[in-house]
Image (cartoon, rainbow, N blue to C red):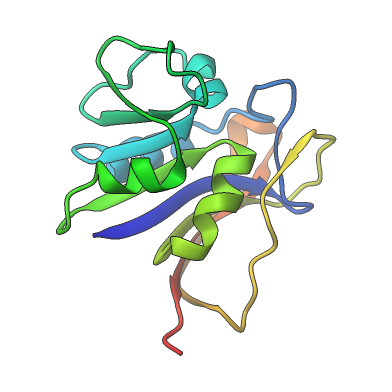
Amino acid sequence: MSISIIVAVAENNAIGKDNDLLWHISDDLKRFKKITSGHKIIMGKNTFLSLPVRPLPNRTSIVITDKPSDNYEGCIMAYSIEDAIAKCEKDEECFIIGGGSVYRQFLPFADKLYLTKVDRTYEADIFFPAISEEEWELIEKEDHIDHQNNSLHFSFLTYIRKKS
C-alpha cells in the first residue's frame, strides 16, 4: 500500500480557516478529482463535514472520528490512524485529504505528496507541516496562473519520500 497526501498550501503553509478552504482554484479542484478518483480517500470528520458533496463521487471515503456513534452513509468509519491504514488494500494508493491534524499524523507514513503551492500568504487557523528537503525529493513541478482569481500564481508539485 502506498499513502499519498494531497493538499493545497499557501506560502505560509496555511491550508484553512474556520473549517473552510482559503481559495477556490478551478484547476486545483480538477487536479484533485483526477488524481483521487477511483481511490480511497482518508479524512478527518471535520473535513468530511466541510465537503460540498458527501461522500465525494467515485471515491471510497474513510472518515476518522473519535466517536464510535458517528456513522456517515456511504463511508467507512475509522477510529485511529492505524485503523484507517488497516482499511486500505496492500496494493493500492490511498490519499490523505485533511484536515490539519490528520495530515500531521499521516506525514511520517506518506510515500508521496501532491501539493498545490499558492504564491500568497493567508490568515488561517490550520497549517500544513513544513516539508524537509532532506526527506522529500521534488520530482515534478508545473507553474500556473489562475486568471479568475486576480492572476493568482500557483504550482502543482509532486514529491516522493527519499530512500534512507
